[in-house]
Amino acid sequence: MASNDTATPPHAAVSMEVPLKTSAPPPREHGSRARSFKKQAVVDVLLRVFLFATTVVSIIVMVTSEETTQIRVTPRLVISRTAKFSNSPAYIYFIAALSVAALHSLITGLVSILAVMKPGGNSAKLKFHFVILDSLLLGIVAAATGASGGVGYIGLKGNSHSNWNKICNRYDTYCTHIKASIFLSLIASITLLLLVWLSVYVLSKKIARR
Image 1 (cartoon, helix red, strand yellow):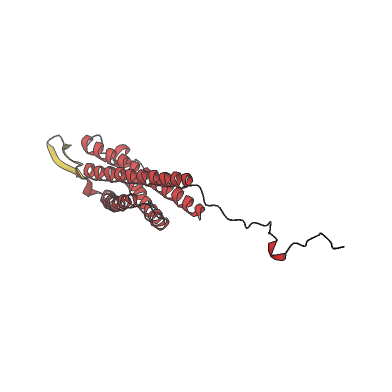
Image 2 (tube, helix red, strand yellow):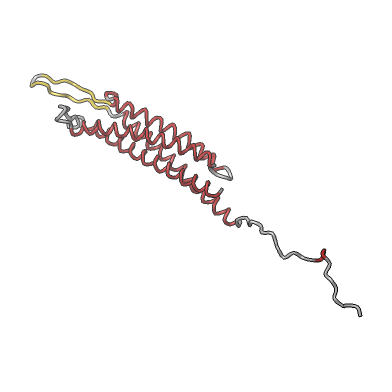
């Protein structure tokens, strides 16, 4: 009697193992990341515009810090003396440092605007260059601010140990300009610090995506 059992052909066997495929991130996730990087690029541009404004105004205020006053040497002798920023090497360095910072903010701001217009936004390579340059400018501007602040404090308070007399009691307008310029330079230093932090943050996000 013939057997009714039929053997399954080898070619008819279906493998139950399905190769696993790495699914790509949903389109929404790509869109949200692109929008996030776009917003960060816009913030970068705004900070660089603000940096340019503060450095330029600080330079203008410092350059216009000139005042002439009458100083009585003896009861019958009165001399005219003029105080201006060029009398101090620290203030000259201050002007040079902020001029470089203003030029830096102008160039990098234009580069950031062009990067915002691109579909991918700022690249990791561009952000790496921004971190290096912004950190360098931060050190230069901070050093100039500290040096000018030290000279300005001596002009405001004097130093009895070194026999340096204060001058702000006679040159009120001059010292007001100096204080305003140093304050704006301090804001510029903080802005550069924020730019460094922002670039490092964006760069870390781009590296994490790889």
